Amino acid sequence: DIQMTQSPSSLSASVGDRVTITCRASQSISSYLNWYQQKPGKAPNLLIYAASSLQSGVPSRFSGSGSGTDFTLTISTLQPEDFATYYCQQSYNIPWTFGQGTEVEIK
Amino acid sequence: EVQLLESGGGLVQPGGSLRLSCAASGFTFSSYAMSWVRQAPGKGLEWVSGIGNSGSGTYYADSVKGRFTISRDNSKNTLYLQMNSLRVDDTAMYYCAKKVAGSNPFDYWGQGTLVTVSS
Image (cartoon, rainbow over all chains, first blue to last red; front, top):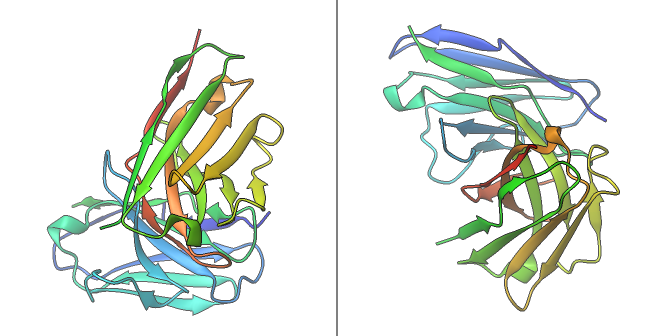
């Protein structure tokens, strides 16, 4: 199975900050990397697919990059509604696996 | 509008069974692969099982293989998860999720149904 490791596990940031979350795969997954946002009590919501493609309706302050084993999710200017937990997920092969999550908290 | 509505969760004793359902609407159900993803309380996301658009291909996480069975009825636009021999560590919110077949993301998720396994 492909292991996905996110860092950090949590971070504190202020509105307006630039935030970067990293995700590392245990083997190369090309660009088959997706990012989801989850708010408390809600289902996950797709933000970025294929490492860098923005899902329809997602604000442009979210961006993704990377290929192979190392990936990043960047929020250019953190907004109040962005405080949530973020997960990466590989769609290279089954079993589909997720990172452990990164909780973005208000500083 | 795409909608996925899960049902069938509840409290069950260890060793018991439950059948989850996911009613789909707003898209051509028979054209899309589907999966179940679970989340234990306070924990991360874990893919559980997936099925191809026609139902011919089924896939399972090792943690549920031999105990859970995924199926679908394209005439009823409904996805199922039959869960047998339930264990305490199967306690979780269970989400159904839609995806295009192949190496594509889960683009829509239901709101989940809670399964609690406890004596």
